[in-house]
Image 1 (cartoon, helix red, strand yellow):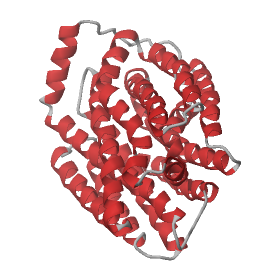
Image 2 (cartoon, one colour):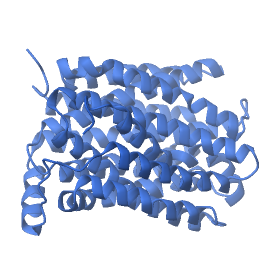
Image 3 (cartoon, one colour):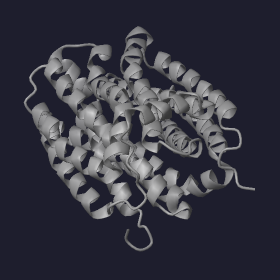
Length: 387
């Protein structure tokens, strides 16, 4: 590995990977109009990807444990080009969701591989910083994907957004080639019975299981908020187009700032403290979104996003601290729960929005945050606390 273990390659990998996940979110009002569907139905454009990510995440962990983290990362980025190109030809909601589902089958391969790669290859003193760089990159990528799609549609064609994603996945392949040298500590795990043994061990690990529950609730909140707020912003009194809605997602960049800033406190005080701070921040932000003035709404979105990103950093740290082996598989289980939360949110939040508007969505998310805080306090006692 390059001297000093630079963080930028992992930040870039995270950013280029997560361009794929939420890119169509700023397009949801346009897609709802073009395909003539309601909020719950158009939410499946996000939910189809996150459902595939959730379902495939545990198997992705098994594959990464068997073949190697670097090899899996390179292969996944290369293959991600294909469904991006298929999406450029989609003329129906079903066709677009099929391409998005295919994207979701490949994304977990990189996610579980990179986290496990860092846990095994990075010096312990650098692990938290490198993992934070990756998480920060995913935040930047989440914003950039939404902005990219919004600008592409504003220019006249939402299909163009997916052509640009094909190019960025090629860049991701290059970033992994440059930033992830061959593993030195990786031991292949290719015995199915051993994988089953590890799976059962993980499922009997209370700290890991409760961390998965926290992950489910974290992404449930994030997707609920940002799927439906696009519909709110496209409607009166704001009546924003895809380009301006894409710019609203700049609140994600605050998460890219707060995540590395809080990394030393997370390493020193542990994930339990970080989750408590995240829940309070998220609740404050959701309360502000109930206001009608656009500046207060955007400020509330920013605080809610910061709370979710801090909670995600805490949960990822808790996953690695709660296990001693089978890291890729543990990451896969966490991502099964995490993106399962997104899949449920894509439909449930849409139903809540169709039922009682934004107030119902905000109340739903507040309840989910409070539940996440309670679960984390129970499951993370003593994790990562330095005396």
